[in-house]
Amino acid sequence: MHVPLYVDAVQVTEENMNEVADWCGGQVRPAKDEKSRPYIWVNVLKPMTSRQSQAFPNDWVLKTKAGYKIYTPNAFENLFVEVTEKTFDDKMQSVLDRA
Image (cartoon, rainbow, N blue to C red):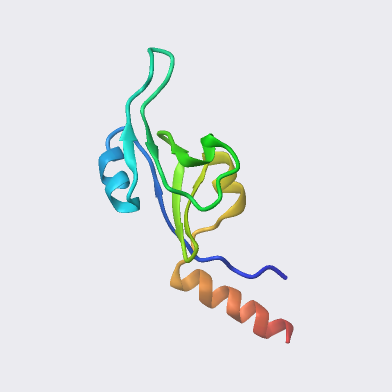
């Protein structure tokens, strides 16, 4: 059984980069050359690579109890589901039905 991890998540777009940077305490950094893209540098907890601190358009910035994390669109879609009140009630009913 998996323990749920509740997060606040925002997908980065070219239009919202400044707002997302403000939200997570990050910094918008310009592209270094014509082959690169601007990104948001985010102070994440224990990044293993520099990429884990860089949120590019389409990436997701997540806020957890432990701090901020960055996920690529593919990783985010494979690991997280949106939880609404109805989703939570349905999952709880499923647990109760199995008890």
